[in-house]
Image 1 (cartoon, helix red, strand yellow):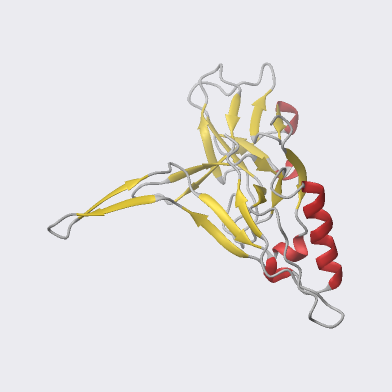
Image 2 (tube, helix red, strand yellow):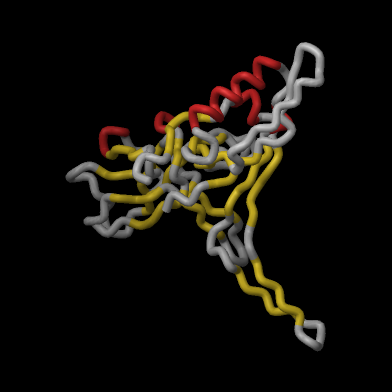
Length: 214
């Protein structure tokens, strides 16, 4: 489906109380000697969230139902703010243009995808960031922040594109800092609404799953 993503964020007041995180798929085979052979089925993790914990009032309930219906259940994706992981830097730090290395210039390449690297010593993992917050992105060359006039951002794909005449020179280190959302969808076509609480309401389960964008 071509237009299967709505560029709108799930209500922040509700997502702030959600649970969830990254999931991977690993095959583990135990041999007769008791040793293990492990194989990663997925090159990239996939995040799952449970948003039902954040619905504590009729107003919140109505907001979720409205959001769910407009997304047509599982049909359309949307933005989700993972409060544990939404910055290019550690959660309590301020975003800086040197947070994440995007690549090295060669004098001709102008497109640099946004990425976030996890870990450093043994086997760093580079995650593509496809849904940055547009006005939060800052870019640097060799550690010096550059003016926004030198590049443009495709916020639908998470791509920094240097304008004509500004392609990073050969050997120049390209880095960026940003806020971002995770692209997700509802992982159900049914919302079970609980009306038993007086003047309140609840939706015990609102499962969400990350969408592969690239």
